[in-house]
View 1: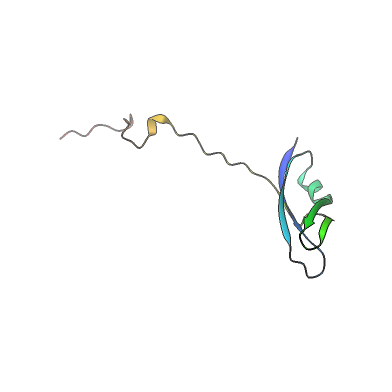
View 2: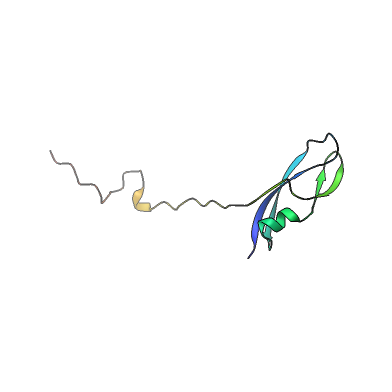
Length: 86
């Protein structure tokens, strides 16, 4: 099974505080394997680097629920409400 991961790298050169997030799509690795693997990334000050991730997580996809056309807020009839009689 493949997963997509958000992976954060940190340049380990002295006095460098560069961090970079990247997305790795459809990797056939477990999260433990992602942490154990060395990845390539580029630090703008020190150039190409190869390091293990500083942080990693499974990328989550959030899908908004579809709105029911009958539940529109523009005055559509609501079958769960009784009409008010006076």
